[in-house]
Length: 308
Image 1 (cartoon, rainbow, N blue to C red):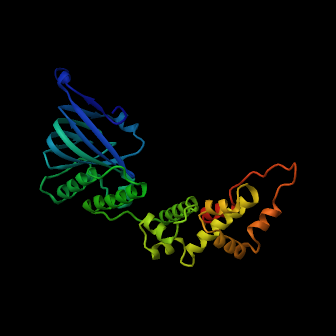
Image 2: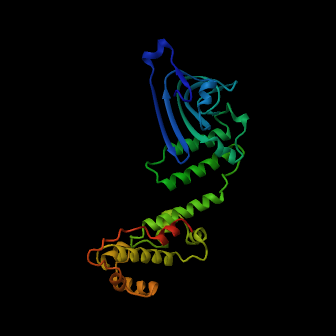
Image 3: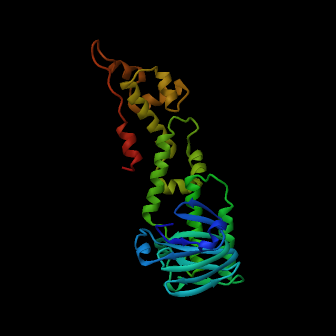
C-alpha cells in the first residue's frame, strides 16, 4: 500500500498478524473486502500527493473497531456503521480486528452527480441510519455478484450503483452525455461489423446483445435507418471485395459473409451492383504472370463502422 498509505503493526504483534485483501473492479468502481488483525494505517502528505486519481471510499465495518482521523477530523466506527473518506485524505487510523467492505468511487464521477461535499470526508453514519442501511445492502450485493461479468453488464451495474450512492448523499443519477450515446452507437456498429459472417445477425439479435428495444435501437442508430438493409448491404460489399480480390468459390465467399443461400445471394448481389458475382470475378481474374491482389478492408464497411 506504499502508493496510498503505510501499514504499521506493533513489533510485539507482527508474528501473530494476519490479513486478507480481496478486490474486484466493476466498470469504473472497485469493491474491496479486508479482514485483518490489529494494524495502523498512515497516509501523509507525500503519499497523498503521489495518488493520481482521487476516489471516495465508502467503508462498511462488519466486525471490529476503527478509530482515528481523516484530514484532521476524528472519527470512531462501530460494526454496522459506514465511514466515508477520500483516497487522498491525510489519515492516521487504528484498525482493531476489523472485517470491512469498501466501495471505491472516482471522486470526479460523484462530483458529476453533485453528490460529493467535503463535509462527507471522515463522516460516519450510524448502523441504524438510512445511509448506512442502504449503502451496506448495496456493498454486500455487489460483492455477491457472479463472475465474470460481461463488459456492458459491468458498466450498467457501475452506472446504476453510482446513481444509488449519489442519491444517498443528496445527489442525482450520473448525467448521460451525448458522447456516451455516441459511444454506444459506435459499439453497436462495431458489433455489426464484427458479426456480419453470422447468419443469425439481425436487429433482434442486436437488441438482445445490447439490452435494447427495437425502438431504442432505431433511435440510437438513426430513426430513418433500416438496420436489416444496412446489414445486407455491408455483407454484399464485403463479398464484392472478396470476389474481386481473393480466391475461393463464390459459394464459400457468400457463406463467409453470412449468406448461406447461394441463389438468394446472387439475386441480392445483382440488385445491389447491377451485375452478377460471376461477371465480377471474370473482370478481376488475374492475367498470367500478374501478381494476386492483396485483400484490403472494405472502405464502405470502415466508414460505416466509424459512423461516417
